[in-house]
Length: 218
Length: 180
Image (cartoon, rainbow over all chains, first blue to last red; front, side, top):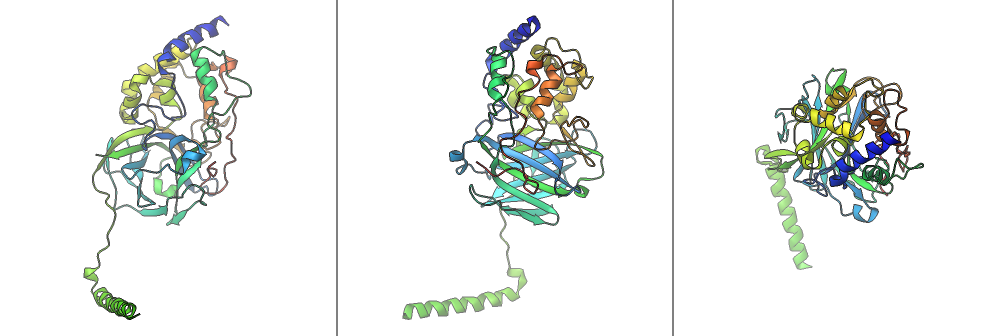
């Protein structure tokens, strides 16, 4: 108990200045919180429907209530970019880019990255697939072209976490998590971009280092 | 009616005009959207909740705009300090990683993904081979931060007791559940 008390005191002190803390990456930073650039979550997994394919998911603009979801929109000034490092240097070798235009999500790639790092240009020469952005309440619009499958639109937030209990622990008002816990993200939506591609388009490496970025037009 | 007939004639005339033009492929111009310009890094993430848990408030924006290749050098020591502040009793975790090793891995925020076999954050056997929708990533991270070498330390802090999403995931594309 003493150890826990010490933990709570130090954790509480550390965290008091950051009580607006959330997760997974939902509203994680002041510059992007509440903006169209805010990434809430990222997933990369083998397709449950086809083990020759890989699925990348980027979720943006989290904690959308059902009443707020219809008005949420992707931003034509925000490029969503999946980065794939296949040689272990933590720099992207392949990218998949997506940007909305006139109600469609336009996807370029996977394609070799020509500009590495914080700045990107849109790889308009790469394989291109377009999908109508699904409206709130509409059946999912899906495009499958050349083995690449794309969806963009609102979905249930797949993240689950008792954020309230976590904050209580860090704030020193609880000594541990509640049991059962309460999923803070229950009943909320996100804007999702889901892209499934053949693994053969991602190179031959046994392991890829991956991340998702949003980039805004300068 | 007369006016409408005139419009029809006009429309027909235009049709001929366009057919005529259509024969000359050089005059066909496909107007595309504007994709020009440079785009600069605004937000990024890989492993879940890393920024949230390990980055101090004043550095959160910087972490989001420091490319992964540069993150380790800037953030490894800060992450270690943060880990030891969160859990002063940290020795090693269930992966056998001491504080320096564990946080140096976390500071470079990339998600490793296996191109063959199971892709999961942790499923009891496979570790960090991807991240699937149903993975209870928060419990994995809590266990690695608070659970000690055998996962039994700080039992009240190693699970948030929320083990699944509030909606079933789909077996078919786009896999995420429909919105509320």
